[in-house]
Amino acid sequence: MRLGRTSTPLYRNVLPLCSVTRSISTSTNPAFTLGIRREDPSRIWERRVPLIPEAVQSLISEEGIRVLIQPCSRRVFPTEEYLKVGAQISDSLEEANIVIGIKETPLNELLTSPVNGKPRTHIMFSHTAKGQLYNMPLLARFTDSTARLVDYELLTNTEGKRVVAFGWYAGAAGVPEALNALALDHLHRGVSSPFLLLPRPYNHRGLDNLRQSLRDIGAIISKHGTPKATGPYIIAVTGNGNVSQGALNLLSELPIKQVQVKDLKKLATGKDTPRNVVYLVHVKPEDYLIDIRGRPYDRSTYYLKPELFNSLFYERVAPYINLLINGAGWKPGFPRLMNNLQLANAQRIARSIGPFQFTSVADISCDIEGGLEFVSKAATISDPFFTARPANHPADLPGIQ
Image (cartoon, rainbow, N blue to C red):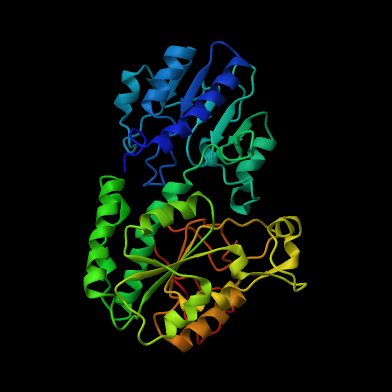
């Protein structure tokens, strides 16, 4: 989806990056070069760009910055559009004071040498801020050199809020992927779901087309209901940030009926629960977190002393839903939404209700072995679904998609 040119939220994300490059350029050398990196070739679906052509034009014409761009035919903006505004094609970014990209740079392409005696700066989502083990070699390359790392994840405004984030769109794109996963799971179980008719996100020209696809399927559900074999469709969304807001916004295109956690068991087990709507529960921390001292949930206490809290998501929510869309972030030291043992317990309760309960998870936050301990890797657009099965998972229980 070519969102950069038409979407205000994404265009705003460009502005802090321009500010970063301006501040670094004025503090180093007036003969300043910015390099736009080609993304890791192994990420075949990574078509996003860190700067759109209009932003590059501004840096060149207003700030006098030289911009190099590595050639790449995958980008959502053709290289020619950057050339038209004054950028120069270059296979090498050795001359770049700042190297900017989206995802982390492959180690064999990472330039850490100084430029004209000044430290080189890289701007990217490095996926190191939470101590991700798989990217510690990348972080070590910076700590062992003079090169500097600016991580989008750590750019904040004066109120401490992130200024560069794609979370809303991750949530929006995650919804159709999640519904596709649910439909595929149901098909494996012998039941055709209305969501089999939903094209995947990249098959839509834009957000409006995706919304219309959801409305079309919603009309089918309103008229014919969800399959009798599956019972009512119940979806849970966690998190209160951009990811969950994007997911909730897209889900609103379906014939949604908002429900509370206390309603879930009755909805899932009731023989007469209407099937011409999709039931949606936006799960809040107070719905599943308990203070081990028996006190009511308190947000400030939770963030101050997270070790005092346990999650009961596995028994209060998970068994009664068909699909979990996880938009809640997680950090070490905080209780997991569900650990591996709790996954097994949730599956046992779900199995007692029916074969279609709690079979699919869309972990959009994707903290590997984090909030959902059983999520051991990230899916890709080319390989979007996999079955997670923790080590020592009970033999009589399946993994979870």
